Image 1: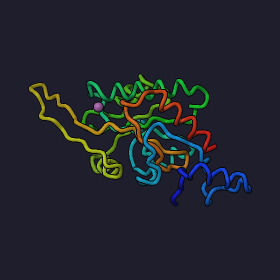
Image 2: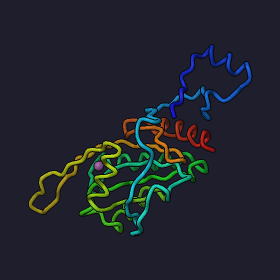
Image 3: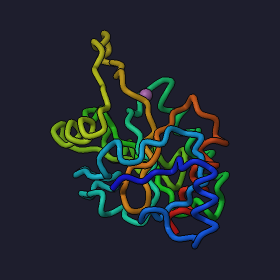
Image 4: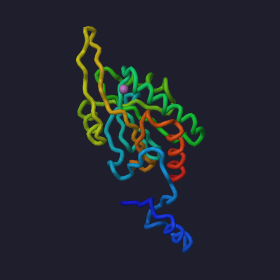
Length: 204
Ligand code: NI
């Protein structure tokens, strides 16, 4: 369903003045502006089959009713992953009680090294709202293809260590699993906080 938020101001005033009817069946407020990229409807809704950091099989249905920040990375990552995880952790903290239904889902693109036990320790070091997800290569390929996330493995060194190049976007889904926003560690925490507050208010 298409939802237009960018009605001309004058037209909006006329509509609001008339009857304050919902705009074209769209439940959102028309005066919203977003600081992150608004990608509502541009990507498919949240859907996956993975294993959580307790070793349990999970799907998107397990996170229904949560605002989800979906991120792809790996625990050996030296730079972007820790920076982005710290950013998301700060954002959830700044949301305070409003952030109680926000979940950070960290999907490993390095399942060979990232066991659920390692993922649990890694995500909990950043935020109690963070959950590590892993799976078979087939399952990880399915979700990365779904959100057009690219990743590739570097050549192992003498010790067998390798880097994984990966996309670093933060995909934000509403409580209904719909895709809404795209951010990254180049966005200030305040932009995330602003948009998440708006999104949470919108959904409740
Ligand atoms: Ni990384």
